Length: 137
Image (tube, rainbow, N blue to C red; front, side, top):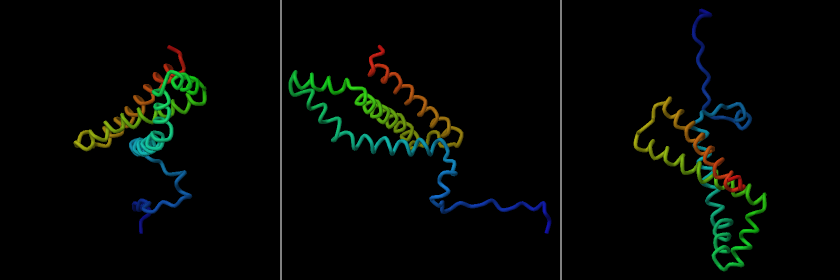
């Protein structure tokens, strides 16, 4: 048999837990996983964090003052910044997935480009909202 014969490419059908660290997921796959993670974070945060804070702010002026004091703490602002990112990423990726459902941008190059756009736009908007949250402007 000749040495110049093409070797068959390895097939990875069942990835073991030890191989996950070396597996290179494409950008579109990372955006998809982040979309699920952000949706789960928003699902948990709505009844546990956001609704109680919103309710506290609407009860009375004293409740609003307590809400303002609570939200002005830097650790709470960091948690809120994470929730802001989760919302913005989930929103931007959701628009991308709606376009994919309409069979727009299914080509590999276009899908990679739109995944990059989703990451850049969601992070840029998060920076803008984060600057506003931390009182820069």
